[in-house]
Image (cartoon, rainbow, N blue to C red; front, top):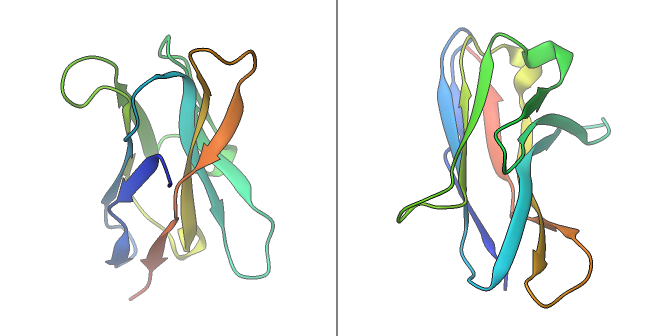
Amino acid sequence: QVPLVESGGGLVQPGGSLRLSCAWATSGFRINAMGWYRQAPGKQRELVADITSDGFTNYTDSVKGRFTISRDITGNTANTAYLQMTRLEPEDTAVYFCYAHAKERSAYSYRNYWGQGTQVTVSS
């Protein structure tokens, strides 16, 4: 069972916008950081952006100023992360994988959990 549920993605023209969502769907875990990696055909997977439980964010240089990551930490959508992507470029085309750095409350160490991935295609 995949504890992360991704949504969003799709086809958009250059200059357009998309929003990805990633929801942690299992109780009994402590979540540290959440974020997205992406993988384009023939390329290695790369970190796009992540956000810690304290709200600190990190972006790869190519998306700075265009992408914004955020995260709900309370309420019905607690532990849901969002990636708002604007001014999209063809080079942003990839499969985007959400991840969460998490552990069961009784566990000693954290590890990464992965979503199923969602395709983002930027093309005219």
